[in-house]
Length: 210
Image 1 (cartoon, rainbow, N blue to C red):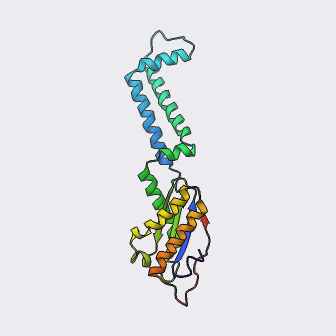
Image 2: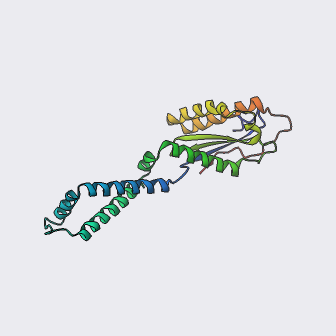
């Protein structure tokens, strides 16, 4: 970071988060959707479930199931499926596999902006702070720049830095990836915000881990 900032008045803040969100709301919707699907199948072929329940009870079938008993079985089935899906999706690998890509991207972006407002926004005299945010569980990264930089540097310019960083990380080289991202961001800043002789280091040169 210190080397990347030698030729620019910009300040780079790298942040690595294990995950940007718990996605409990998405897990809830998955559990509800699958539970209702199970109830729909029950309504379509109730006899299959009734026979399975009788077999589970040792083969002692009812002479005839009443409407109340069938409703109770349906409610129990829905509840059991809901709890089972909720429990299974507590496993991180399965949970993140089931989160749609657009939702991951939106949550990572929101988290990056939130951390930028706390750690970099308006914390430099010239509004030249840049947050480099990496969310490990989602395999996504964001670059958020303060107002002075955003007014001059188009968002697509950061694409090369993102690709360079994620290329290293995709190969299992986390440290090299973050270093590459910081270096590339510093190169972009040096073009538009060169360092002057009175420039001081306004933000700590360290990696923030969440």
